[in-house]
Length: 113
Image 1 (tube, rainbow, N blue to C red):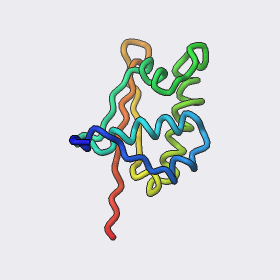
Image 2 (cartoon, helix red, strand yellow):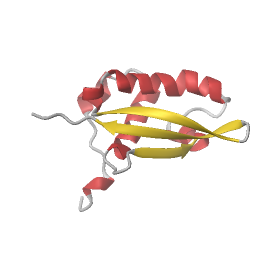
Image 3 (cartoon, helix red, strand yellow):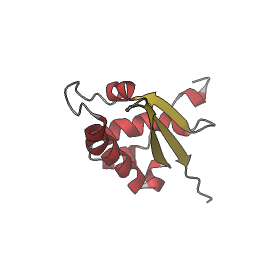
Image 4 (tube, helix red, strand yellow):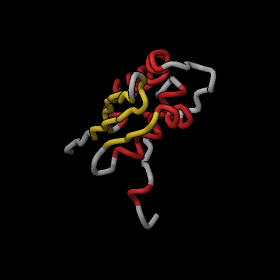
């Protein structure tokens, strides 16, 4: 509590509106990075699979993982940027012939009242 930047403020009304299980987990993870100065989350694909609790035998290659897990989750979050409080974009990074990491770029939405 002494370091408020270490905690994420989840918007429960938005969280409840998400229908995909990976979208809920993705939102919870990215909300923690939204208030950081760089607004960036760099993670290996294996770590991301663990964070999202994707079964080891499900979506083994990048194409299926991106199509079935990552893309729908990001689309749900970006469909309501005012509800989420941010928008997110991602860039896969190759290491040799295979994708190894993903960089999420988070843009916080500020509203003037």
